[in-house]
Image 1 (cartoon, rainbow, N blue to C red):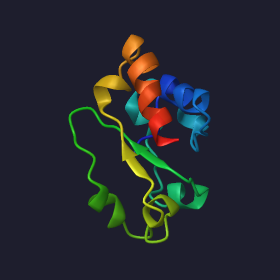
Image 2 (cartoon, one colour):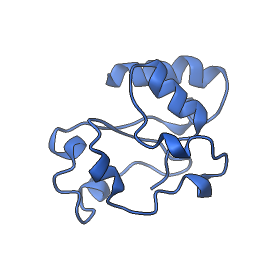
Image 3 (cartoon, one colour):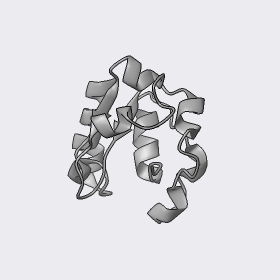
Image 4 (cartoon, rainbow, N blue to C red):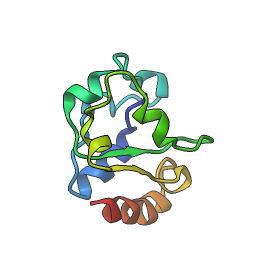
Length: 107
């Protein structure tokens, strides 16, 4: 599990959301944004779970099957979403237009 990079975190906030892992946002390399404790997202109690991964599809069933995530609010309330990586994970115009539009559709 990896937290969002700075521009993704900023776009979420711009759209009215809250990044539950803001302490990781300034790390450019993905290895600096790894969430070491797999239960920490559950403890931080987000309302929404947004996933995006370069080269991999989001698998909601894999998230649902994580040990200890049975009562994770985004699972129990059907609030897990995927944003395609080309429109959110690349800095530039697409993130500012298509990425923001995708986030706003969720909110």
